[in-house]
Length: 188
Ligand code: GNR
Ligand code: NI
Image (cartoon, rainbow, N blue to C red; front, side, top):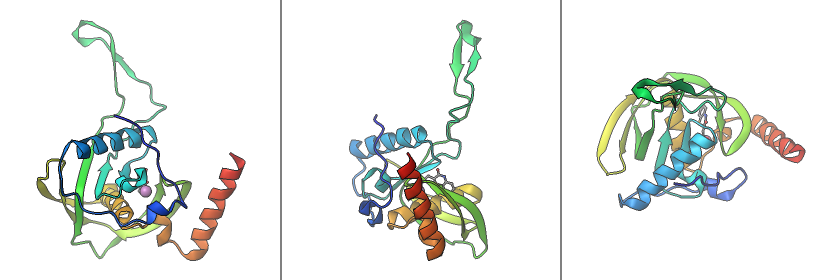
């Protein structure tokens, strides 16, 4: 497993339309493992393969990322002292995802993106949706999503089409966000 470099705006590769996965092999499993490691390290709640430079239709999501400031819990059941992850991981993989039945009703979340660091803005998206996807073995599932998971999967699916959350903002707000990012980079 390896932490991979996350591409940031204005890297032109982020505008790539990703292609479907057709081979469910060890290379795919390594990509997914590396994406989880990269997402938990960042930390973020989702990651699309194109964000690590791989133009394939693969997403990982975990709405319970590690809290880097949380104290590890020390236990000694089983007779020896050991520590537990303070947050429960809920890793989810979506290969070749498709959105079905997006709700007409919208909900607004303040979104951020690991490829647009330190910029946050409200985005409206369908409040619920159904998703059809495959797992790393190629098995197909369908599931109804709501709340942050519905929002997050739509944010990630946008990456597969080369779209960033700032593309949903007015040109004025997008330009303000990009200026702020450049200013923070100059100060760093
Ligand atoms: O870490 C992330 N947080 C987030 C918050 C609200 C809506 C979407 C997201 S996804 C983002 C990680 C990322 O950039 N995924 O592509
Ligand atoms: Ni993103």
